[in-house]
Image (tube, rainbow over all chains, first blue to last red; front, side, top):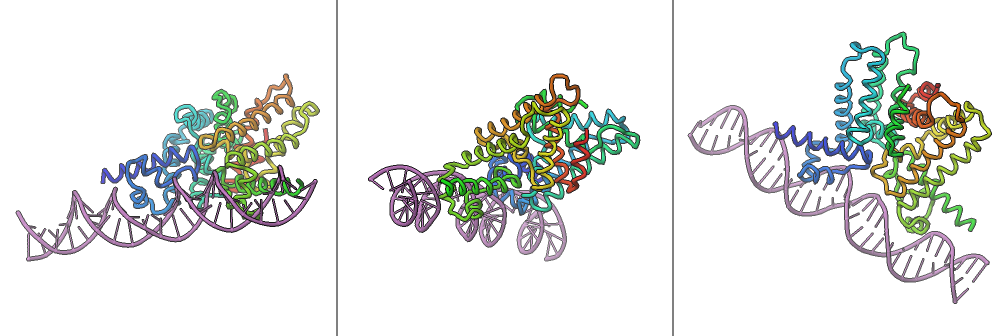
Length: 172
Length: 172
DNA sequence: CAACCCCTATCTATCGATAGAGAGACTGAA
DNA sequence: TTCAGTCTCTCTATCGATAGATAGGGGTTG
């Protein structure tokens, strides 16, 4: 029960860590099993196929992100943007990792259908959050543009190993 | 010679095609060999290790991109931006694929060092092109921000399968 | 001859996935 | 209370497929 959920979560934790570095091909059942301290067959018990694991990975990532963003209705436009920006800043500064869905999104052609679908849902939800937070009178960059800028800024800053490039790119 | 260069190029072509869909883990010596119509050992003859292949892949991709961009000195700021934008629009519209370096950049933590270095060079060169093309009096988005926006727009448009999101994100 | 280039054959390591055993905990009937 | 049955979960062992990589042969060309 409690132990069960814990191991299951630790599997997802380990998978997320590796997936956010190397993408969908960047984690394997054996590696995750070693990280957690179980056998790969035990990982298969919780997630029968890799697509199952990938899908739940993205769904949990999305849930956490949306929980972090909170309720868009309670925010001013600049607060909404800053909140989403902070989500990505955390990935860069605190985690030193890519956005899971940004990476999976770039790999979308090579993903199992259900993983690609879950990844698309992340983008839809963040855009919906921004759409609501910015309101009908917003005349600045459209929500999709703001999200694109953040995903791109994460890549640029990490490739060139210069975190100031993130702030440069994000400053509207 | 001619035949040699041709097969070598065809190997790079096949590798680029696959890499731009699934990233560094998205292509294998065997797959490429089958695409080209040779054996995997022949691919190893031209590119001893996968890192060698990956590095040359990125370098050729970078060379082609810079050749497409042309000389930044001859362009106005808006021409320079439009030229770079068109480079990414081609990836989306014409190729229906990611930017190779955008994808590799997202995977940077899992790449062999020389491939990661070559990927970083792509970003440096495009930023240098924009820096030169925009000139010292440019007050709009900094070069890194423009590049970030384009890489991100490519991801967003492809994940949500909506090419208008690219134009939305790109419209400054 | 010698260089260039592709081949056959093969290696070790790892991949995702499966079968089946067994440990432990809970449940309901005797 | 005890015992049989069942469910949950991890294990050992193994499958076929594929990964990157290598050794060595042979054909073609200059």
